[in-house]
Image (tube, rainbow, N blue to C red; front, side, top):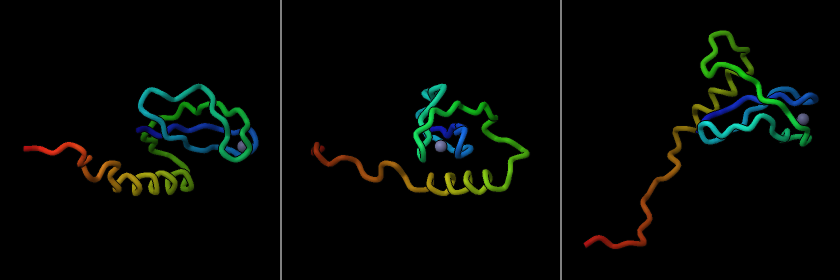
Length: 78
Ligand SMILES: [Zn+2]
C-alpha cells in the first residue's frame, strides 16, 4: 500500500492509502465528499510541514501492525 496526498478545496490536504499505482486523479474528501484533486508530492519530501510529518509518523507506526498475522488454518498439512 502507498499513501497519496489529496487536497480538498474546503478542508485542505488529506491522505488516502491505496495499492501502489492505483491512486485516482480525484477522490472524495472524507469529511465533505467534495471532489479533491491529487497532490503530486514526492514520497519522501525533505521539507515537509510538521503537521504532515507527524501524520506520516502515525502512518509509519500503523505499519508495525502486520496485515496478516496467521495463516488460514483451513487446510491441514500432512
Ligand atoms: Zn472536504
